Length: 173
Image (cartoon, rainbow, N blue to C red; front, side, top):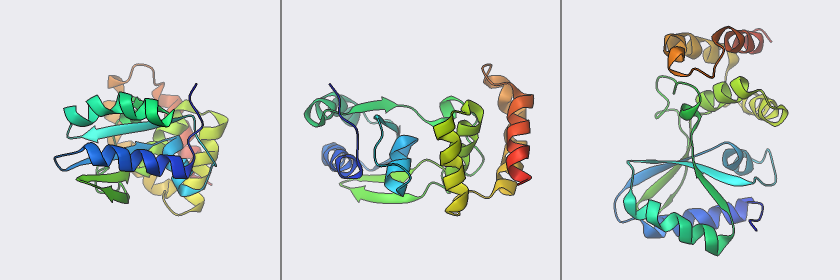
């Protein structure tokens, strides 16, 4: 059985993955992992990551690291569910360097959009935390959303008018 991932366990995971890397790259953490590192939650059920560029050595190491640490790891990003917002890589805050790997939070604006689209209670609390901590400005999120809105057709699970209303409500606060 997998155990909850706390900040210390997440940092052990990062070190273990970084030790496997032989080439430079970035790993973006998102969702619960970002929330734990930001102090919004004590733990998360899994670690969602995106590896750029894709790295076979790291991908092959993940199953062993998962077993040794008893954690869930998913290859997932907000961009699997909503368009990655323009400039997302530059807005992805650095967390730590481990070996050749640079760990970053996936852009909080794209995370916020994804969380607004899903609209689970915990997700909406995370968006509130992003705003409170100055990581997301609601009016800038609306502007970035408007740039990405024409690409929503690529995400058939999204109801564009509902997502627009959610972003507009946030920007109107």
